[in-house]
Image (tube, rainbow, N blue to C red):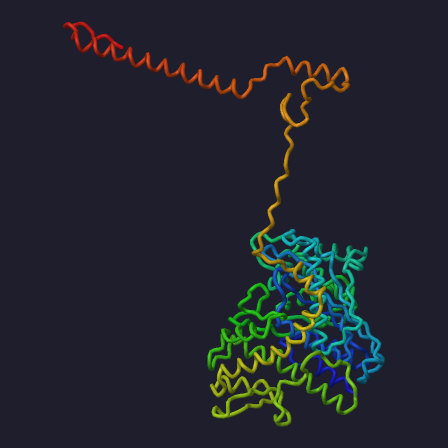
Length: 522
């Protein structure tokens, strides 16, 4: 049985920032299970990257601490005027009956994901609604595979529409009340990190922070979890929810993993990220080209990934193995694929990460904490090549079961092609429709043969045919003769003109003009 302090340690460990944590402490002291809401953003123009292992690994800590994870995977596009964010909400209230670790088959739980279809109305139609629907399904399948690979239960994962509560009278009125009290400055500032800032922002980007704040109340959560890029939105919620008469919630934030080329790992920058479905060859190629200067720890995405993903997952697997060996049970399932921690078999007790090296360079190095890896790299005791190889091996082991699940799921493969069509594929040209032009009278296949009996026709048709027959329609031969006649007439005129000019010139030169007598003009 874990004490409230132990649960609090599980909930708050490895966080980048947090405020309002006393709310969580008091709930745990009362013996209740805190409810958490996880809000994350996916760029709708690109496939998600492995940086999302960071919050998903943290959710495993929440489950172990008995938190009712009210996660939200936002699957619908929010317009940012220069891009979109898939807003997702994964609602997963775990209805535990005690604070002890119990076998999964005895745990009553519910995991649901809310697809905020209502938010789709906030885009400017740069992404068609049909495409958004396909990407929603794509992320549902992807998350199931990632959760399963980490051992997070997904047997009852289901997706519901956000409009089931966001179109209610109460939610709509609270949204209007919030709009009546929030200034443009505060709304724009709150979304500065997740909504693209432009000189002439669309209204959708200004509404975004308020909607996310209201979701805390209408989902009935005690704290919200997200990346540090959402800090201003969390501050916005702490400021404005009490003005509507609602309780202030706690907010926990995980670190953002730097990209492979430095800076933030971004879904829209293929050179800064590794996708969940990248092959082992692609992973190793990207890591080989990644920025990892010897002795440089600032902005080093390789080191940051070890700290934020590989070591936490290695610890998670070690703790799960210890719980199973002790017979105490765990809320986590056995994940897919190779579930060994990222250590060698001969690693000493307490090791959380091993880096294998050639014996002539000192042999395998074992680390019990990230700080030891950080210090060795800063002092140049750890070579970038050895670090990259160890990280590549770990990432490949993480992605293998996810990619295998994709290759075995025909529906997922079909959805991926619909959600992310080839941008350079050429559109098939449509053949021009043939337009029927009726032949002139007396022409065509259906012309009546000479001497054949005339079919019975109405008086109106007979009158029309007689009128057409009286009109003189020039034939092609007549048209050609007309052109020849015109050409010949023009030629004769030019010839006469030339002869006349020649005669005038000859006469003038033969008899010069007398004094004071003007020369004859042409």
